[in-house]
Image 1 (cartoon, one colour):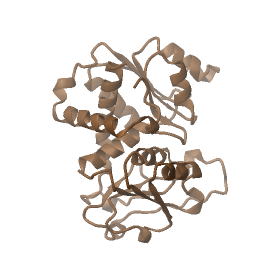
Image 2: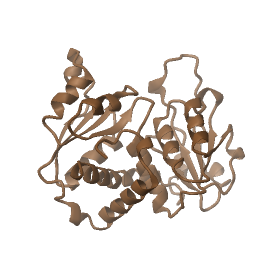
Image 3: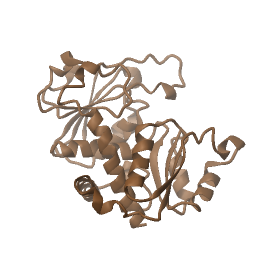
Image 4: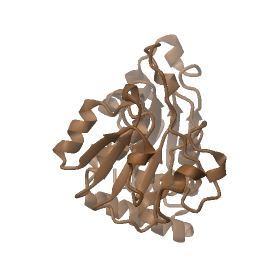
Length: 301
């Protein structure tokens, strides 16, 4: 696999192999500490990032590669002079062995991959895709030893603009008999293209508007913040679905609570000590998954 662009490119065998590799890296990191020695990997972010950028950069260093970085490429690169994304990538691919890129345009990763001579890793494209986040989300579920077939998942909050949700449901649809509950206000409902995608892949999708509509034994609650930075319509009225101790009391001891972070008010801090709240562990898992992606993709390119 030359580029990591969309969750549509992954199948069950690939995911199983990637998660096994991430497990091995977590258990025996010394085996991989010089596996990409001599490689140079760029991280180029046209949008703000904490977890994705720093976990990728930590992954690069832990694999023995070197990192060159532009944290604010929207303002601190030749894009401010009118250079096209394609020309930027053509130039940067001559300096590096891989490019990790976040961009505000939905199709940016596809455009970059079309002209790059080195692997492109999509670290988030507008409101469209965030495949490496979905991979670490699934890896966190894997670490909880939950089988992916017959999984029940509630995606909560901003389903309209939330690229983490959009990518996660595509990965979930790889598996059989998956049931996804979409908990949102009507203005932020899951777009039809993703509902159709789930139906095409024989996943069950159930829209709902309150936590009470979710089964108490649901496997995963995946909460998200409202993506205020994506708003183009002033009449959209955001509504946060806040998870607190009272809400969590409705669910079983086996239900896990995930969030791609950063959070605002949609998860109360009184939930942080609940053993079912795994969002910080989820963020830490991101480094190992991204190590596995970099290792597998760049060594096999």
